[in-house]
Length: 452
Image 1 (cartoon, rainbow, N blue to C red):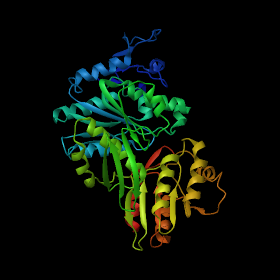
Image 2 (spheres, rainbow, N blue to C red):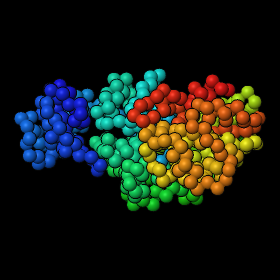
Image 3 (cartoon, rainbow, N blue to C red):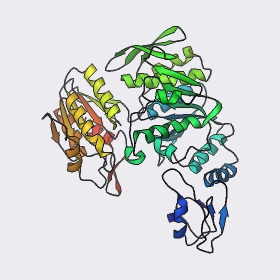
Image 4 (cartoon, rainbow, N blue to C red):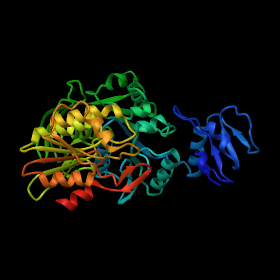
């Protein structure tokens, strides 16, 4: 017997639980189930078969209770730090995890998988379903790991995957608009992000970016809050950022004290990510002096601002940037440290927010010396049609089209000269290319390594 929430996979002795969220209600699939031991519902249903119906108050809570009891309450002693935001979730989460590991064993769950100690497992979703989260929590209980740093995606929050969790810290990095094909409006998207604050523990603390548009909405939640950013009223104020091609130096002011921090992480956006992490650790009663001591040992997160060099001396930056904000930020950084030309290899995912493409196309052509438009998970769309959308508002001629992404990257590396910067954006270290309904093996990193 298994518990199922997808009617397509229900077999003879399974129990189907009709979970629901703002977008989907599984009760409507009851008619499709021909074999099952029982169906768990929380709405009035006209019985259509001999399969027993078990009515409960809330099927989402029941699903949680089933797995929570099965794994013997694995969340009981687990401190969860939840992180949401349009950009910076993965990097901030892994900075926090890596810094905390200097003080006690800490685990991570998110885009880069499930990681604890020296073990790493891939996950299908940034924020998995509650049964998977509880399964991982059970592993942590057995390993005596009491802290989990976890990404909470807007989609995961929308679909109530974090319901029944309690967060010791809730972090919102920024909200600039993404996945509007799912959320339909910016307000819906923002409200999904803000759901994280509803799951704070009674004495939990929200850590938020005071410079972000979401800050005013967060304040209305009246939660215990720590702020960071450039604003003079920030609890952790960022000052005097000096960006180099191999490091970033800045001042951090908090409680009247000023600290000079030298970080190996590149870009202003990573200053925000790092300061957020510092604020989080200090809120957990770790000395800021001890925290800063370990900053120099931080390594770039896989697929985020990863640096390579060609034989000719051009610098390659591989990054997952795919939103307008993250793409703009990386280009802004490249322009600040450039000595030569900026060559950008970029595309846009098919079946996703078509409306953002023209803005991304415009910003990359305006801030690059040369742009190579290429494929990036086209799915059921033609790459030429996607590129047409990307170039809709472009009024320059500094771009070419190379449909095949391998050839586009190879061409960029071959033509770049000494001191040029090559930006390869959109996929990071994803190990697939989504074409139609297939996931073909592909990795930007492999292509880079073969051509430098």
